Image (cartoon, rainbow, N blue to C red; front, side, top):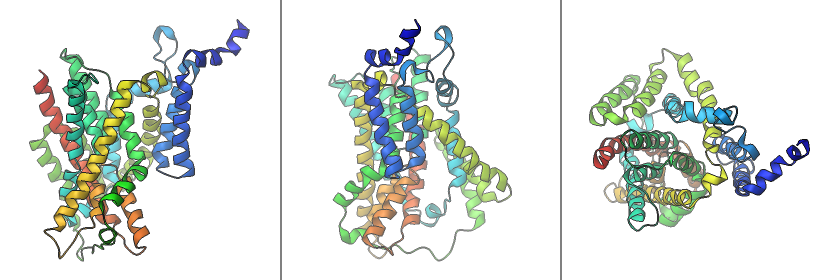
Length: 397
């Protein structure tokens, strides 16, 4: 018996060699996070979670009960991810860390953030089309969860996927549990923005367009406006799209404690200590949703491909909308690259745009202009999620 326990790990690998493939995927993410320094805050915890989820016996991810003690990462899956706690805390920290001045000083950036949401609906229709052709068995609930990946917003993807799955269970509607697959796909594309977006941007823009400089407004946005913005946004979204209030409301609360200036301790905690803790736990937990036996399936791979397609379409939509807007604003042209930042991957997409602008012209600083569509994309994706949560359940019942 003691001799057999020495070989227990090797026996487990022999029973399920897919875990070795997942080690390779984790290694790839480690490489990009450490060697290439591409979004290490996301990639290191996610890659570590993948590695830990694919260890023999799955000590950290097992359910517990009669089989033994519950794994730590499974505990976080059930008590912090599936009940939307961590996604909402991320949104609060994001609000506390976000300066909405780029949006307020350039309202047209809201259009670019809205335009990028086209990818959500393309992926939704694509999932339904594949289901009709018999390639996959996705219903409307699953299609909505897959579509939101196009916004490249991990917390929103977790939120809507959980809601759609729970609605199906509560109302007897057939629904697959794709929460893990959609969550991992969304965070993977958020982290891989520096790899996916640059080739698309270069393909659809000319060098002359990438060299466009955008002036910054002379008059800063007043403190009063910055304070009123989160309050009014919560009210407007709450009235028009009530289902989006959990995401938008908690984000605007985070921004309010930042802009009010009267609770710096709370603002600092929300955007630093609390945010860092949640990112660590969220990354590990998201990665732990990827054991080989679940991830290396045709359905999961299909979700990843649809999510990638949605993200590409969202990037293209933002770029083309910016180019189209230039037809009507020749005196004050937009660098169309900022349209690609309309996806919700904050601030990764904006940084990618700035890096590309700097390579074309080291003195061209468009980061804050890119942050406008980037922030608008977060609001847009959360709003679209609220719309889907309001419409989709009515259509399937």
